Image (cartoon, rainbow, N blue to C red; front, side):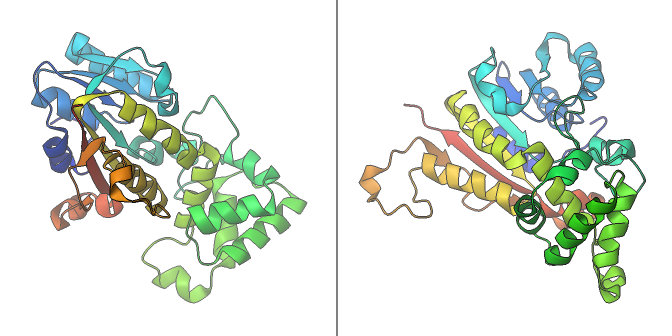
Length: 305
């Protein structure tokens, strides 16, 4: 299989189960790994979505290779209700930042090189991370770094950001990284398994792109676009992403959600869970692709009624 190798590829193929003549929706095209996987497994058609303008060139290459079997729409999956194609035999989400976005240092997603603090998945729209950091209220900073980033040292980091921006705005990834390191106890700078800036960058990125809000809009819209017996696969990398998917999947399968004390006969069963627990990467896959370590895959099949 050429090019970008997607996480949990074997598990995704198993649950998506692409068939000849089927119509499939890849809501997060990225490097095209999942789209290619479907197209090379079955004589099917894939409609792929991505809001990133830099995904267009990769999509054009797919169009040349696969012809009419591949269609691309540059859009955010939160706008799925405006998509003309469908209904679909299978729909796939792979949440979070793509490997292409992480590896391209000038996008500002990574602390491993100096770049403008951008972090926008759609680099032509919305606030940059620098603009967000310059204007976010204290409570917004806390929510991003403590909740989205799950950063234990959030108090010192939020305080340092608020103090720093009274002097001059944080404009580059290096400036933000150095500020985070200045708040990190020396013993943790060298002993932590992950870089001290990892979680803070994650939290700010989620806030800038409103990633959880987008998921809460996109998943229900996708479920409505499934054919009867159609399959929905969701790959998440963050506990909050997975929680949204888990609760929606339980609702559609007629299972209780947190705070739902209704008797079972009052719940409507719209789908069958194909994964009681999320599938995770094998040791072999993690060794080959460290990004797969936190990946979780959930899948369901829509009812036929």
